[in-house]
Length: 234
Image (tube, rainbow, N blue to C red; front, side, top):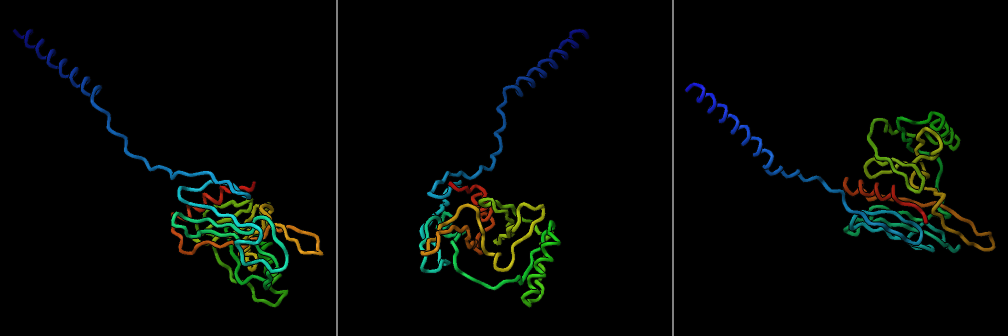
């Protein structure tokens, strides 16, 4: 009798173990939690540039003197003279405008200091200011401020908020941020535009003023970084 009871106990335990194993083998798997999807992008290919933009964004090229108010009248301009990057609402978040014949004062009112700053560059800025009797520039300390890296047509830049700082000498290991009149202008090796002003020999320039929308959201600025880093010349 005792033996039969023991057998029943083992049989019951065996059945329970079998049921437990079958249940977990056949139980439906839990659905994977949804993952955030990367915004879709599309290729753009204009006459002068190509790149990628998130869905809804557009890039508009201007040529032959259009898209800028920074060219002196008289010469004839050919090539890329303006570029606009617009968000899905049609607002211009970033703009390039060709520049020629627009002057300005020298020196730097502010000096932008990153952690990898160049002491020799700072001394050169001081000397340039003193040469034209300007006070020493106010040092803007950016050494501990987070930034986003940007590479636009081989110009090395760093974005903090809605402001882009660019390196005047990308071949150096230092980051020598442009200041003064240079601060607002990129000087590209490409793209460039041609200036024809008879009887002078036609010349080329890669000088463009850049502006960025102050009211752009953090998400828009992140998307702008992606666009700028994707742009190449044709």
